[in-house]
Amino acid sequence: MSPNTRARGVIDAMQASKIREVANAGMGVQGVQAFWFGEPDTVTPALLCEAGMASIRAGETFYAQNLGITPLRQALAAYSSRLHRSRVAENMVVTSSGMHAIAIVQQALLDPMDQVVVVTPVWPNLTEGPKILGAQVRTVALTFGAQGWQLDLDKLIDAIDAKTRMLIVNSPNNPTGWTMSRVQQQAILAHCRKLGVWILADDAYERLYFEGEPGVAVAPCFEDIAHEQDRLVSVNTFSKAWQMTGWRLGWISAPLELTDALGKLIEFNTSSAPVFVQRAGAVALTEGEDIVRQFVSRLKASRDFLLPALNALPGVTALAPPGAMYAFFKVDGMTDSLAFCKQLVSQHGLGLAPGAAFGPEGEGYVRWCFAASQDKLSAGLERLSGALAQQSRA
Image (cartoon, rainbow, N blue to C red; front, side):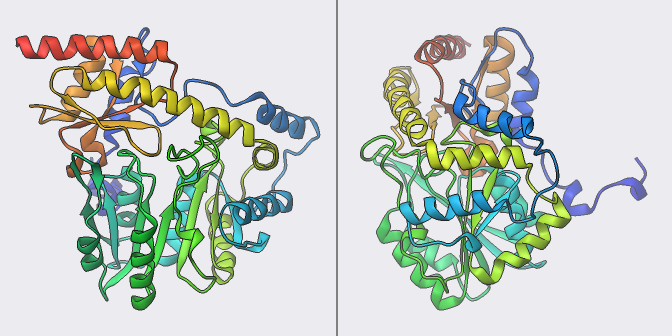
């Protein structure tokens, strides 16, 4: 390939998603039990599908306001005010997916060579996005022990210094399920206030939290304790709690001074999210609490079924996560999780995500999305058991 036809160097040097690399090897292959993506095995609830279809039937197939239609922004403000602190529609920005929300916040706030601190292991999009803009990423790793995944707060505080522009935290965390405590959030927020550091909180899994009544409990969130003048931006998505992964709809809760800039970036990225998708989102917020409650109850039951079964397998160590929808488990002696997961697909018809996809801290681990029926989980366990037995005989 001619050097003149290549992408920018920083893009050319980026690694493709290892999750996609495994999935691409198995998608469309008959009989594969797939647990590689963070999505349920059920379709979007009928209530939300009908809202989208009703909008299409009403002819709402035209461009919309950059920041989102007013009914959805009002519903988002009411939803956020109910769960966290008081918000108004002007604080809320509608985006074409949670990933789009993350991308335009980074575009709005990061310059080349800015320093970004990220808590890892984490969904790779969070560490790679700043690099696209020329920012420098510094990671602070969680550690795994008898109490599960834990954050060394002092280590994180030390990493956030006068050179830091942004801290990125995903809690509950993908892939580990680790959830930041309120005490940790208070210490981090105070430190970032003092230094003028922006916090980008990826709150995609805040409703998928198992400490408390399922579907009612909400994970501790920076939005609960922040002030309007804080440099805090929360990004969220309809994909997880309302099972709308394919709809590609997300939102941002931001200081008022930032929303106009975000509107400009939406115009020059996507123009707007489709109106019929936004109508479904509004119904999710105003009428979809039973959907969330039932989904979280199902997830908890699946977690409580899968984790003991994983731990019963020889060489596997797994602890029940307090949030999200993943078992992130260690396999003794496994040092190349990408090769291991590719082998699971090709030889055993089992699709899992390699821990290395979430950073070097994830090597030696495998992620299993447990948003599936117990019958499917049982079938997957049988295949994993067979793979491990074959590996031990080799």
